[in-house]
Image 1 (tube, rainbow, N blue to C red):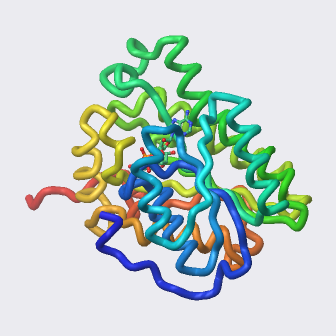
Image 2 (cartoon, rainbow, N blue to C red):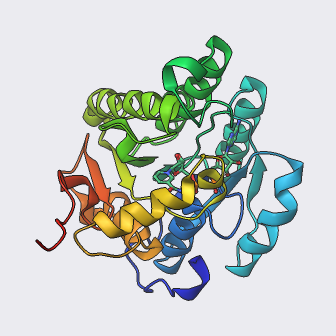
Image 3 (tube, helix red, strand yellow):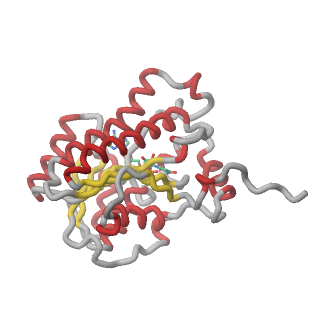
Length: 271
Ligand code: NAD
């Protein structure tokens, strides 16, 4: 998916440095965003979840001529401390942050939300998918003395019910609220915080949701554009929000889903 698209090159991110969190493989949304930011001149520190992923992520990072990679497990304070220390040591300050991280257990991402959400599953989904953004926003803001921009990734399941999305929909609703509160807190420091609500895309995360493929099909069939959400649109929106093009935009949840989110009733059959 990501490889059939060439990000437009330019200077919109020239001289800007930032952190991209959440590349797991070439289909990751974080990877599409990173490719676009790099093509516009950004210098990127990549965090990855652990050793297993390093083998997959390193060749991607090297393919765009970069090598700054740091392990970071968002559930582990020591790991987060070390990751942000490494960025501070190398660069002193940053201009942008991309948070593209979420997790809920397979058992939770199916059937009934009421029946299948355990206390532990809820805690884990909220910790990894929501608290981690609050935590990284704080850490990143401390190394943004000249202002900057941050984005996180959300989905329509925050606003409307979506089969199987369940506790992740609850977490995304909290993430969108966290985006607004972080935007309020950090706005006076010249830091813009926004979220991108992407349509369903074929990634590892989608594969963890029961019926994920059908979510993509329905997203396409119901959408205004009658097409899948494309990486270039998501990455383009990220570029806009993270560059000077996004001036005056803060606390926003920007949909990139081929218009799916505005549909109340799908097309009617011929009578
Ligand atoms: P992905 O599986 O490629 O990315 C998810 C990332 O989260 C992975 O890199 C994984 O390593 C990371 N992660 C999970 N637990 C972590 C932890 N404890 N510490 C550090 N990293 C951890 O899938 P994706 O679809 O690219 O997901 C990225 C973001 O986009 C997520 O927030 C997801 O909810 C959101 N999103 C996805 C879709 C979609 O359809 N794929 C749609 C809208 C929003």
